[in-house]
Length: 304
Image: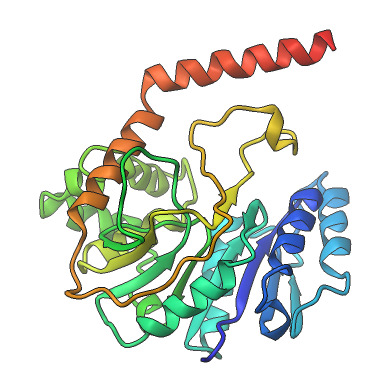
């Protein structure tokens, strides 16, 4: 099996970067995998944190080969991701993509490589992930859904060619075809508004444009019922256990087998679960509970 190179995007969080790399190198395939690290440049006043990250990535990590690309200027995450993925896919036909705030299971690389190999010639499948939010109800071990997940993912050169960077063009087609509800995961999350905000410059999301690019072509993502990825980047301070999050995911200790799905079509149960999960996590009631919980944690820490 051809192993996909791993791309890691880092910026100014040295502790997150260290933890991410320590977990990644615990994978059985790490020593056989090539790692590309794209380190974004500093904004004015942020040079020290960026330099600390670059010291972390320069350590002798246990991968087959580590290539570090140090950006001389600050490009921002979107430009860094788009250019990094495009660059590596000129040399390889598949990639695995991570950001510095992700913690992965020792089984992460095994699953991602198995999935990328299994579906390499299935044109309808353009994105794979093994990240899953905590949810109610059972799903198949793996499933297909008309969506994308940016927290630990993989794709192929054949799929990345569909990426459309022009958000306005994507939004026009979604609206003209009356697809806003479906694009929003059947009302589960405001992805259409997220795309509008990207166009207006209120965010610089590469993800919403990648999702829209595949959505408009009816492409599918391979997802998992259990999560081999945890996002620890919503801590605000670098101490994940001291805050409550809107979205939680439990890192599963067991491997996930990749069994080819037939026929290739969207799992409607998965779509319902995703929609319900996002709708609850971003509801005003849940946001209020998380706010109160975090306030209580901060007050408790001060008393200690």
